[in-house]
Amino acid sequence: MALDLSEIRQQITQIDRSLLKLLSERHRLAFDVVRSKEITQKPLRDVEREQALLQELVQFAENENYQLEPQYITQIFQRIIEDSVVTQQVYLQKKLNEQREQSIHIAFLGKRGSYSHLASRNYATRYQEQLVELSCDSFEQIFERVQSGEADFGVLPLENTTSGSINEVYDLLQHTELSLVGELAYPIKHCVLVNDQDDLSQIDTLYSHPQVIQQCSQFISSLDRVHIEYCESSSHAMQLVSSLNKPNIAALGNEDGGNLYGLRVLKTDIANQPNNITRFIVIARNSVAVSPQIASKTLLLMTTSQQAGALVDALYVFKKHQIKMTKLESRPIYGKPWEEMFYLEIEANVDQPSTQQALEELKAYSTFLKVLGCYPSEIVKPVDVD
Image 1 (cartoon, helix red, strand yellow):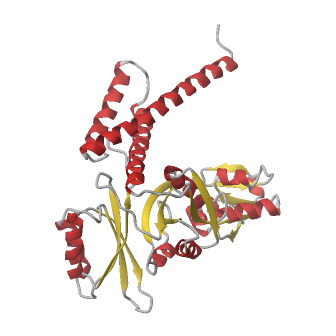
Image 2 (tube, rainbow, N blue to C red; image 1 turned 90 degrees about the vertical axis):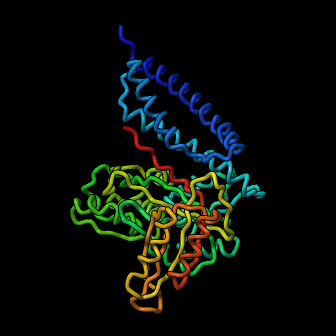
Image 3 (cartoon, rainbow, N blue to C red; image 1 turned 180 degrees about the horizontal axis):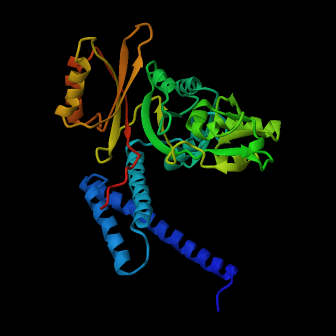
């Protein structure tokens, strides 16, 4: 006799709770691992070990006839490995950069419920339990609040997998003495959020931030006669739609933020790309020390002469020292038409002797060179598995 649905759900609930207990135990073991590596000074990540672990798990599941797809197994355990790596990084960073405050103040763009707000919470919970949230109306205001000491950190979006680099943030980095101290990647899941509407065809006005509109351009083009109202943030758009309470308007934003404003999801997964991720940077008044055991990045600001091949000569320095460059972004120099400065992100710890030597050599090929910050690379790329 088949079990009824309520009994099946009770069994699922019990299994889910058992899984949570095991995940908690697995998470706690990460602290034992990092304490051991702290003594031996081994790097936190061991890619070969991770590959072997995933392959062993897939093979074990096959031998035991668990009937689980290899891709399903690897996706789950890649996320578990990511949690372990980030947990170990945070442990070392907190010991290296002692923070005595009971709470931290973080400035972000938009109101509560914006992606920047959610990313700020994500970052803060890694390092501190208590968070004071400071909503800002512009990227410039975030810089000002950190510079004045009103905020300990500022969280800013730097690039998105769909819409690319956020030039306004790069331009502000040209003129600041603040330091980059962290990064994080936050998944962006855009939805159509409404007050009380079940028919998408009745929507004639969409409210959101220009970046969100750009990232959902294909979905928007499929709608008939839709007017766009640009807002300073997606959270501001949600607040407006909630307060106006009209059946013909909708906000484009995230579901969690919509819940804060009493909006419900009419349609989800509307971004041009299914894997829509925004990379955020964290700024502070003072730089941080980064453990040599941690994978780290350094962001440089550089200008070169106008001679042919000057940039190529500069970049060759990184190849010579086997330093991987992950980002090269050019922006115009204000007051100097047709001249550009370059942002270079490298996978290197600025305090390591090899990096210092490379930067010293780079001075010979640049007319201006500034280190904007060295920070832990908390974007853990999954290993490749056959």
